Image (cartoon, rainbow, N blue to C red; front, top):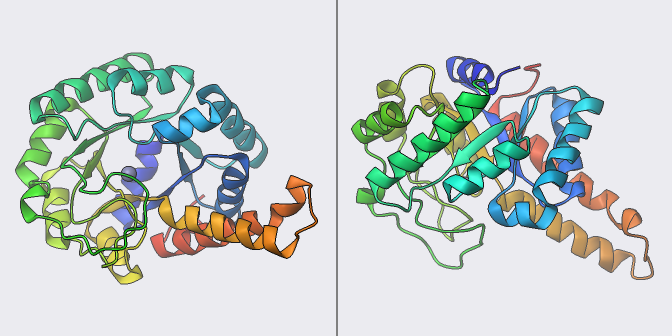
Length: 288
Ligand SMILES: [Zn+2]
């Protein structure tokens, strides 16, 4: 099954595929269990830091093993590859989705590098979906901020530029800045729904829209964003919190326990529960 076909269907039917990040086997198991339970296709993300922690080849092998055993569509994505080389390296290792994020670079350089990745991937595997990013998200990593964060309107992605970027790069998935941010701020981010709608209108039908920084966005805003055209939502921080809180509790409740796998069931179910909650919110239940 092609990721872009699923995304096109999601756009048409107004639901979204969940993209969840992992940095170990327990998180991966929790996410795949949730997806299997709710019969939904799933994307697994690994950032450059997470790739370093798990290993690129190791991640591919783990995801492949779950795919063979569970038989649900799982797409492995090198989340926020910050260079052409890093995106190519993940693709060469067997990732079946690509994300190249050169949004920090000047516009022309972003186009050039993103197009280089698209050309490389499509020359070898035309079915592999490539995501590019335009409009820089103000916060950098998966953090919980104590202060409120205001997003300057001029940093948000302009629809005409989004259309030009897509045309010049040939990407399949478009990721922009619509008021979203990475991590969780003290204030709830306010999504610019009108901007999402306008970008959706101007982009070709076969290009789908991605929302990064899905953690900390209210259920109502999320539903509206999906209705406005978002077909893929990234969640990292919220499942990291579920993971670490459950692990702390598990260690506290079982001070004598030394066997790791006996400490993890609580952790896995906490992450799984959070993922299932999000998948239901995204409307992606019973799609396979
Ligand atoms: Zn992101």
